[in-house]
Length: 281
Image (cartoon, rainbow, N blue to C red; front, top):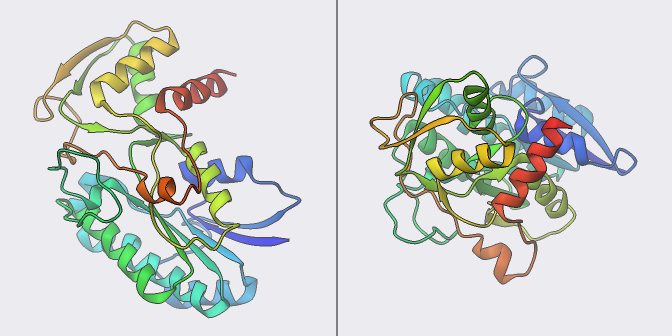
């Protein structure tokens, strides 16, 4: 039986992994901030040595853009040093390491989707701290899968649920029409992760659902599929309330997954349909 340690298990991706894994095939060790502080090196190493996982999946992160800008030390402790500590365990016990990363490692100035071979150039503390985490993983363990994704949604607070809540409460919503990306469900990422950990195809992967849209187009599709009217207004990022500057063009090309014919992600609209059906079910 495969022993899998999921750090940040209560987040969107950790929750999705636990929902779809086969308990007869995997024994899981789920930790979150309350159970284990991934920034505490001794604590992390001790947990790893006691449980000796075959796979470590790092879903733990500070993803709040504003909080990262206000408290860069916290961002780097969790997003960079946390990844380092888990990588040290992976190297010590011979485990495979899965590191979740983000489109924010790029500057968003491209005119075509970013591949895994494009240079990173983060414009935010969040993006820079996640890139630092990637670098630690590469440095400390060769048995790694680094997965960069974008616009992830699942259980909990996220863009999809925010749009639905605003519509049902009759609130108007200004949404950026100048931010482009590929909406990706946490469940689809979880399926990819559970596929990858049974392989030795180590490296960095871009992992988003297929297709591209603006934030505004995404919001409009959410309401259409949910059968809600809503009060949406297309706006520039600077005019849209509650939206901080993000990469304007955050589109990732799943280039490596495609050229080695390893895995195909679904269309983003189909994934959204599945998510909404399960949410209402």
